[in-house]
Image (cartoon, rainbow, N blue to C red; front, side, top):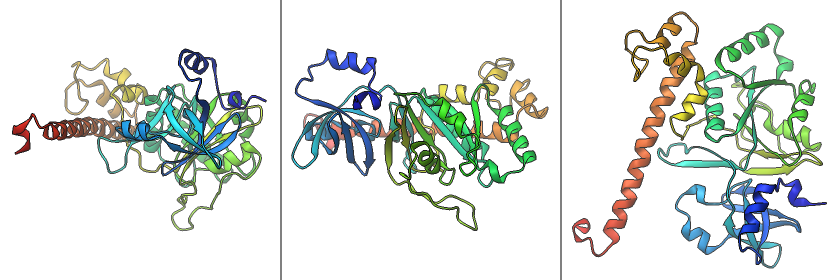
Length: 353
């Protein structure tokens, strides 16, 4: 059995490795990460990994450290320990804006092919959060598949109403319904998963990510908890990131619940997420229309006719403002770092006053 192929080792990665001088290293994939502690899976087994001094020294931000899903070069030590020397080129990287730290990003997972965007359709249904989760997928160039969970406790009229809301909001995104109890919809998810492909599960705590992973794996590999009685909100059961291999199938990555979501990518992320608004904008009178106060704004006309939802429009404006703020904050961080370097250079006397 080829463990590396089960882990998603493909021709693109093989071509890169063959082009490099890596004869002195082994290849592995990060299957678990928690507070910069790593578990690496190789052809020979699972090992506890620590990053090399060189990798630590050269890391300028969080994304320069290994993350679950990364392919890495390693050298074995004693007692099932390995040193991680290099992160191999990433096919994709899922990031969000670090909470409370404007201008900085948080890595969620890497080398993901498809993201299952999960949302509880009963107690915690939130279209604005769905916008943000899908925006993260588009920013990462990862295909989103929406999974609406707990359909067993929703009546048919409620399901039909919420499906109509979603279909009005999103174009050409697959939407699946799932009950982790009755297993309705489960076969459809199984059919999507392909051998050697990597699938990430993102959504708020309590959406059913861990239960779905347990059902797919066929055993209880993830801790699950019931909803809080009063708030009906999920409790955080995953405090780390972890990768699982399905027998003769795909690779699954679970992530901590994400209730607060800051999108940290370019404006093109909004173009993909709010495609309806950008399509309408081509008919606006002014090419630089902000869709706020300009006359003959096609977006505001559609809003007035109820062709787009008020919450969809409001969320677009909010995320647009957040991205502008993020870019300014990111520039400010770079300026501060440059100033520190200038002050540290003994040749720049004027900066050390």
